[in-house]
Image 1 (spheres, rainbow, N blue to C red):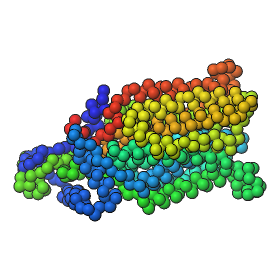
Image 2 (cartoon, one colour; image 1 turned 180 degrees about the vertical axis):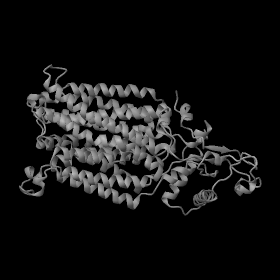
Image 3 (cartoon, one colour; image 1 turned 180 degrees about the horizontal axis):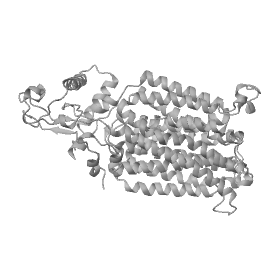
Image 4 (cartoon, one colour; image 1 turned 90 degrees about the vertical axis):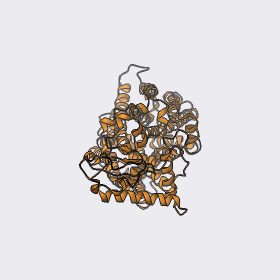
Length: 567
């Protein structure tokens, strides 16, 4: 079943096209709000005049190009008009996404040490289990509220939700850094996930300021920002946690950072998030109105309606109630009445592309967070137990290695790969690239005592393939999720994707933590020793690749409201 064949399940009963030269037929829309009508017509006239002039701003030129691109969407002989990325808005989106992953990944190098300091784990082998619960608490909060943030962005706009998310996420992360008990850390991490609606809103916003000619580049920048946070967060967390122990000259005993050894990196995370919020306030413009109207052809007039009955006039109603635009003396171009409210999520999930992309995104999130969690709790173990004997600084270095080629690949290579192979095939290639790293990492311990240089080389290869492959897979997935749904429901679907992405990241650490603790205690030997969970990662990634076979190449292209009507 193809992408386009499922459009009917996403159609709205309030999306109507009227033919040209419509006279005073009894089917003409009546009882429309004149103020709403005048507002929308004036807005379209203003946009048309602006597009015809030579005085439009960069954002105005971009909006006009988007409008013309959407006009040509159903013309088989036309192509989307190339438009330039709005640099400042893209950079603010990138900074917001960087803040999000920077804070989420920062605690990984010191998490197991923090749990150990709390004294809640009965034995060292139980630290992985309690670390998993702490990581998962953040995902529980996201699971419960991510869809709500996405839905609210469809109703109230992208900009306010993004700003609120940045400011509240930074505040709750700061509280986490000053936690003195496991319970307080658990509660603050849960709150951190609850107020965080950043990811889905960023993806929706990007899809609304790009078209098919530049969405690869736009999402590549967001992917770079996201991956940069994943890389730089552990560096900051690893090198700046417990500073009184590592740098006693600058952080003496009994100082603030000695009493709260994990507060310094969290204070930096708070500062980064607050800066991102301020930039969003200063630079970002609301795109919800743009999303509602630029999906209409420039030759049509949109009339927002509140009820389906307002669309159809009774035969006895006279033309005195009609807008002059609907009279016989004023021939009309094709006119569309569009319902811009998001569709119910259960209706959206009947679409196979929506269902499959969200399922793939869930499994992808679970797999990669398990890898990161395993690296954190496994590498700190002594070589006698199958680990590498890493300190938190070593872990920070290990997490950062993948960033060496990250920026070059994502900025200069990804968009070319995506244009050559298409989004779907690029996703599959990215998922495949990570497999060797999953297999290789578990064997690094064989050289942890005999050849540390070779051991670090194995760690480097594993981290680079994980980072590059994951980056390519996630960036492609963001594009496919946005392409799977009509514009009016992108916020809801991106929010729902984040909900189930959070579910994947919620159960992932629990599976990794408990599974790894079990592998250390079962005394069964290979393959059920410490290597067991790495083998499970390979299995999960193969499942992801098999699931992707359910999608076809139509997912490489966007849906539009025009397609919804024509179908």
